[in-house]
Length: 233
Image 1 (cartoon, helix red, strand yellow):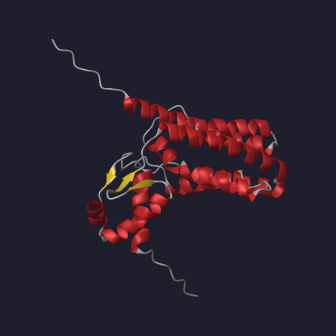
Image 2: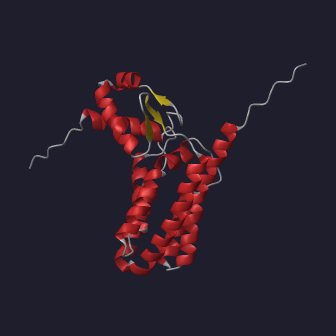
Image 3: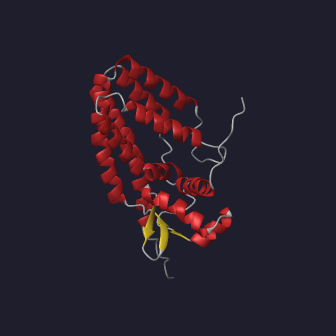
């Protein structure tokens, strides 16, 4: 049997390339996106690139400015902290419900998702977040919260995580937290969840989310500090 591979459209390819540049921090927060320049690099028409940018703007990764084109989302500490607070509240509730309602089937899915996450290399050879790890990480967090009875609650949690996706990548690409052990954090959440320690698992998940935020807030603070003036002798 011959398998036919569906070739991505030019807009899909441009979307994937631009999204990767955004997530890797190659395009600075708030930077203006010059359509003609990027279209030239990608060897696509400006119309094709606008289609890709419109899709990215719908996901909140870039912003559309009337009569001025597009720009990378700003690094807003207030917005980041607001999303973080909402995520901690919603995800803690969803995780508690998963622990209460999930049963053996959910526990097996959590173990499988965690196993795939452990096996995926977190960083590429050039020090960026690996796409396989990013996909496994997203799936792991989804499965954690997908054992409860409320599909709407899981959908809200997924939506909030979508809104924080760029912040999450910036935290690892631009900020620095050398003492952090992300795999150990994931392991702690899994161990507590499977032990049916709802309070402990929810607290561990909250710390996991907040530590990502803290690293990026510290990075933003460094950017906002004025450079010291040279002394006049």
